[in-house]
Length: 257
Image (cartoon, rainbow, N blue to C red; front, side):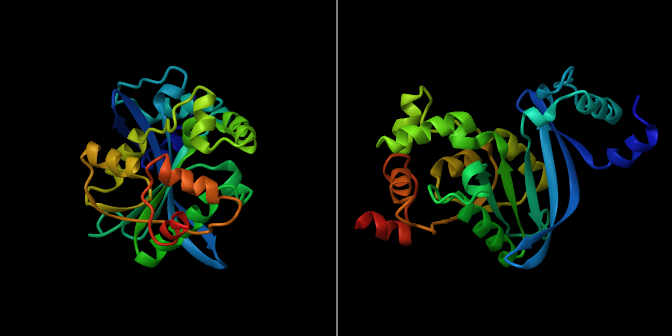
């Protein structure tokens, strides 16, 4: 039985967000000071979990009480299944113009700083862009590793890439689609936090199309290319030539060579 005082402390920070025929439990905002190139920047952090990942989760019940939600969380092994989250900066709800980044988790790039991809660069650069703009949100999507195939499968895909296959070929040879990512839950959280249009930081037209299909207001797109090197040039070219990413600036110049 959860202590009523604990429930009281948490209930105003837990929102129930509908997503398709399920619900999302969203906790936050939480003050999060972040070291961004030696400067401390204050973000507001949220995290969410789909109710169908919890034992006995009443996914279709928007009126479930907060004590029941907390009890379900404590009886779940959530460490075995990563949860997504979002960093919010500035007046995200009310500002007329806000930037967002839908960033797919990349264990090797984001954590280890791998140069096989540009993910770590995109993560930090988009955070800087949001802060410089004055308001925005970075969605960190934990179930998107390897374009949705998972970390272990991504490691196997890397082995195949070392044999000469490109990113798309490796995923297909392992029995996956080129890109298995889904943005429905992230968009549901976005709509919970903001109703006004957003500008999307991306090179990927699929992310843009997912937002537009959902009915979310999109006022524009900002490309994000950089950190191009001998280690990731083939990977980046594959993004454009095989996966349809929108090249611009330094990436267009690289492809033209």
